[in-house]
Image (cartoon, rainbow, N blue to C red; front, top):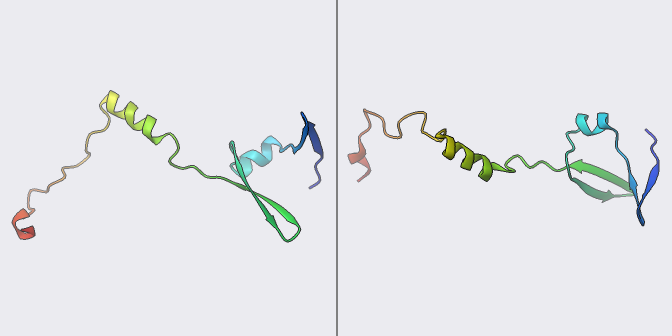
Length: 81
């Protein structure tokens, strides 16, 4: 695929189509890898981004309750002493 380098202020940049951004799950940042005469753009995954904010929302809504008991009825805690 051929694409043009475009002027962005005093710099130049590369414009990626919406199709490419969606296909490779590119959001806000990419890792730039320079390797043997090649430039590689790699999406940066941030799977835990904003978790702290989401956990606060869960707590506020009361959605942060345990789904199962942390101690089972037949559990013998004496064995651990």
